Image 1: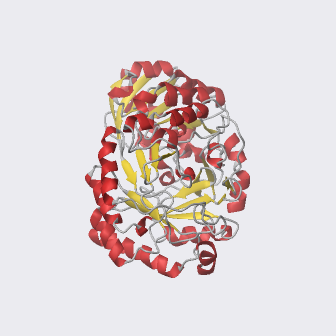
Image 2 (image 1 turned 60 degrees about the horizontal axis):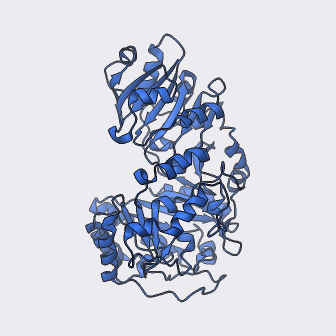
Image 3 (image 1 turned 45 degrees about the vertical axis):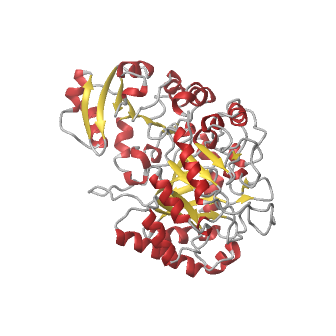
Amino acid sequence: MRLVAIENLDPSSGNTPAEIATLFGADAWLTLNCGGTCTPTGGDKRLLAAAGASPASPLDFYRRLLGALDAPAQIVRLRNPAYPLHRLLSAEMDEAFGPAQYDYVLSTAAECGLTGYFAERFNAAALDRISHTAQAVMPEGYFNGMATQRCGRHWFSLDLRRFYLQDNFERLFDSPRSLCVNAIPTCNYRCEKCQYHSPRVGQRRDWPPAMTVEKFQLMLDRTKAYKRLASVCPTISGEPLLHPQIDTLVRLTKKAGYSSSFATNAALLDGEMTARLLDAGLDGIAFSVDSCDPQTYQALQHGNLEAVEGNILHFQQEAAKRQRPCPMTMICVVSKANESQVEAYRDRWLGRGIAVVFSAEHDIENNNTASFAHSRWGPSQRMPCHSLWHGLYLQNDGRLVTCGATAGSDGLKDNFFEQEPQSLWRCHAMETLRRQQLTGQRPGYCGMFSCWTGLMNTWAYEDGRLINHTLGTWMEPLPPPLSAPQATLESEHQPSRSILRRALRSLRRRLG
């Protein structure tokens, strides 16, 4: 017996509950309102009776539902299905992970940037094992079945990606969702890793001066044509705190209705700058710090670690005093010089209440190939380049670049200030690259970069943590508090044996 449970159905998704049930070959369906708890709102009367009327946490709700049925059942749980669903979704999940062999399958549609939505297929055996895992480590409300036996991770096929990224482009990607502009392309650091300012590459170009406030405001005025735009970042290749009016750029961005955040090396984040940014309403900040050892830090980034850490901790304290949320993240680029420090770095910053992201160094002298990425070309392995569908990247004169990796160039001929914003989003260069992306062939213009050829992101369970790997990148955010009684991981639980997990095994061994 197969059931489809549809949580938080969006009427604009284009699929009715009955149609969704048919797509997934389900015998019955149920709709629910779910957040911290689940409350049934409609569907098969037998399921409604089995589920009961009282709200319960999602995990408890589904355990109660399966326990009340008199026959073995599988549940397909759809969370926030605001996007059109395709019959291939269920067919691919079942073909790659047969229900007789797999108790749990996860599909998030991250390959197409469909945020908020996911699908989980599970049975009672999976829920029983999941109930003994640490739920807090799994993001986005998933049940954390990837930390149990007999589990799988479904990735969208090229056909499914075409369905969303091409056939539904006008519906889902008719405008960028984020915009990055190189308002200050210069930097006060000469980090060894940097493709723009490293002493290993020399000065590739004469960087233009900072974008004026007036031109930045003109850009914001023109972005009103982008109905899905949600965030604006004031830099790509440079250090944002070098802009003499960075707080004004943040304030103007917020006034225009967009979120504002950026990454910084924090060397200039003194008390005055901290106050200016917090007063302006900064929404988030990431700190590029590649070591917790002063000597290693100096060798990699040529800066003073003690001063930088002092600036970061002062910013944290001031944000807390103001009781204004401003999420902070530490970003560490892992190389041979600092890979032995990963554990110490993690403990140091998580212990201070700041999330941590690790990423592999990209070899700036070898086409920016990720040092620790294990990648091979092929549509089934390749992550679509989100910048082509999600982001707009501009030099400070308005010339279009396709992503941050190409910000060192002069840009394409298309210019944000010389043509209509919507025509720029659909310009010939962007459309050509999008078509190349969906053919399964190696793209030409920026095919040199490993982001076109790397493995898609996946979760892998090890050493009591669920780690997200993306092109040699993983994030370890602060876990939310566990509900009592605190869940513990049973020793017999083993990591997934999926193809992608095996491909990342060597990476995990090297990074500990």
